[in-house]
Amino acid sequence: MFARDKHKGEIACHSFMIGKGKYDGITRYNASIPPLVDDMPIILSKDNKNLYLQQNRCQGCSACVVACPTGVLGMSNQLNMRLACIPRVLPRKEDSCVLCHRCELACPAWAIYLIERGSKDSTHLEGVNVSHEGE
Image 1 (cartoon, rainbow, N blue to C red):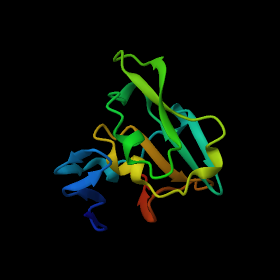
Image 2 (cartoon, rainbow, N blue to C red; image 1 turned 135 degrees about the vertical axis):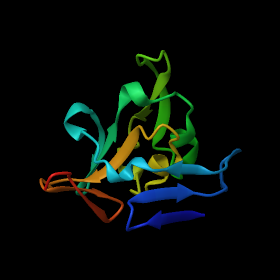
Image 3 (cartoon, rainbow, N blue to C red; image 1 turned 90 degrees about the vertical axis):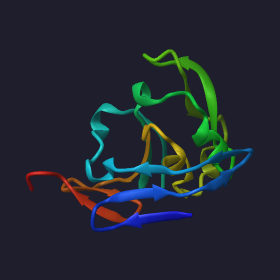
């Protein structure tokens, strides 16, 4: 199902079912590059984590919406630079988020991030410490 190579910072997702769709062989190699969260809006803040969306990277495929087990995310009418609808947190659903990272892992464009707050020296992606380059 999900595998993480902690030494290389890679996330791999091998043939798993999400709702009605099947996503095969989605592999992430850019987890070793910390996201520039200062440039991304926070779409949800819960406990000590923020959910960020890199809007212009989003392809509007709704994989994150389908992957969410609690129905927190939905597609909005707002368009990004690709003219794709972007996801949003549905009204009165903020507290339903279980911080499971399924939206993050389902995104083929790597446009959504669930990141621990308060870390200046490193970015924490699903419990794996990924240090900034040059430090």
